[in-house]
Length: 130
Image (cartoon, rainbow, N blue to C red; front, side, top):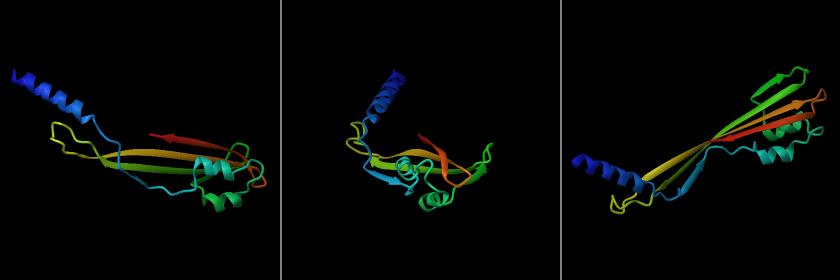
């Protein structure tokens, strides 16, 4: 009987701990112009030069050549968002509240292919959030 009471109490605690408010503060570790919006605003196929890319985004993480001998620049940005706050408390803890933190990781990859005149031939963006 005591074991059943402990199981029921544990289930009640788990159910009530799910009543959580949204976090109150937000911290981001990235302040880069390397975003989907800025990329689409700055890069124009057949127009944007390597020097314009350098002045906008800085040096790439990796420079290679593809099978057609075109220069390929790779930019990669990882960012982490940490949201902190407190839950609304629960009946079990008599109105107490607990600190909580959630973290989101975002990955942004920009791949730019240049023609033989150092002008953007093509580019692609890979964005993930988890």
